[in-house]
Image 1 (tube, rainbow, N blue to C red):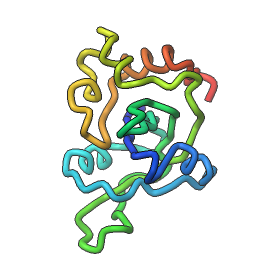
Image 2 (spheres, rainbow, N blue to C red):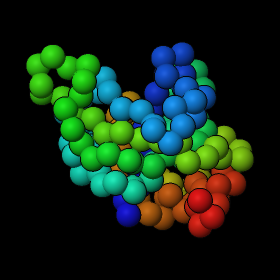
Image 3 (tube, rainbow, N blue to C red):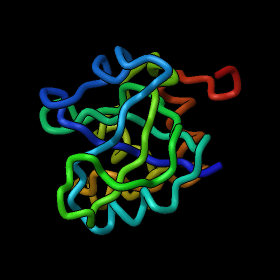
Image 4 (cartoon, rainbow, N blue to C red):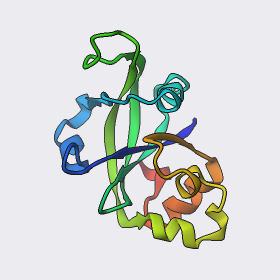
Length: 142
């Protein structure tokens, strides 16, 4: 299993919006960055990710699961852009902020810390474990 981070402006599409989609989940559409697209092309069904509220909040608020591999983005008329489908797994007990990540030396190499603008990014397994622990998310039970 691989781990990822999906960033969204909560005013556009929030954690609550994804939760409201239920088991059917939602297409992670609208990504127009080649690096982010390439990250989605690497995803497999069952991969997990953090749901990150960007802009003013800058915090991880939940955990998601990839439920459909990369496919053409339905919002792209050119056919160049891809997306995956994700569903909400569960919220974190304590939202984990960008400031928290920057303050923890175990996360010094994390892409979020070093390139906080990338909208879809990989998360190393050790980073995943650290954040799950600090945010109060028990990945073993979900």
